[in-house]
Amino acid sequence: MNDEPHGWGVSSGAGGAHVFVMGYVKTSEYSSDGAFRYVGAPWQSNGMGDFVQVSRRELFKYAAAGSAAAVGLAAWGSATAHADAGLGTLVDYAGGVPSASAIKSAGHLGAVRYVSDRRPDATWMVGKPMTASEAQSLTEAGLEVVSNYQFGKGATADWRGGYVAGVKHAKRGLELHLAAGGPSDRPIYASIDDNPTAVEFATLIAPYILGWQSVIGAENTGIYANSPTIELASVAGLGQWYWQHNWGTPKGFVHPEAHIHQIRIDKDTVGGVKVDINNVLKSDYGQWSKSGADIV
Image 1 (cartoon, rainbow, N blue to C red):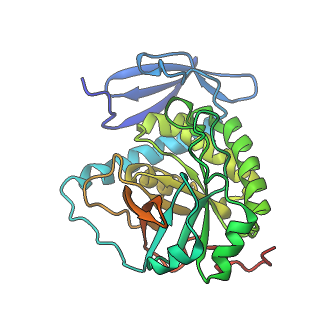
Image 2 (cartoon, rainbow, N blue to C red; image 1 turned 90 degrees about the horizontal axis):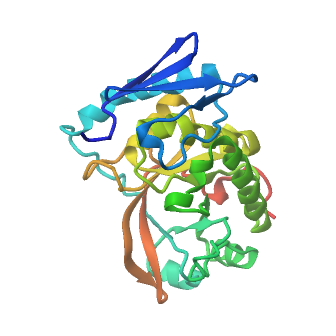
């Protein structure tokens, strides 16, 4: 059986709640403070049984979001792909730091830059985190800067820690964003660098994003994700900025809520540094220059 959920729902009972996914029924419990946690199920060998800070009301909200989004997700298979708006391109990179002049000469508007530490097992990520001097070089060259955050990946992905991890990573991301000169009223894109299920969205990703919002505010919370996850987040009212990647996205589809679309990975170089290429889709995509606050 394909373990990707076709749709799902939640019902409340005397013993807690039940989550239905493709015929599976997962029993859950509520702790004394009203938070929700799963007791265990076949698809949770990845540690999803950890305590999840989602209230009963929030769980129902995200379940409803998943059900509503499922209609749109099902329609995408036959939908005509949306075209990118073509407002210019941004680069993102971690394996080095190309000069501002090289980025400008290549015809890009600017860069999406990490305000996150490099993982201990990823010493090659010498471009993490962005420094104040790099940000200054970019802005002085008339280039745009956008902040994003990702520390873990795969089994150690930041979002797998739920709400508590969201708070932790948001605090560190904000610290590095401000240290690099980022304005307090510009977003940070929190990365969901995966192809998650709707269940993972409701139980881990939604709490993770709520953690971010508790630190930097919903108005400054961005999400880097595939189009199905962007659909779930937008329906649930989570995040206000969306950067789409293509892993798990229907081929050729660009979500209408996306501000940026990552179109090519590890196939381009700028100034000798391998970069990813992104299309800008909206006039305001979280760039620092749109800030109403003073940039340090």
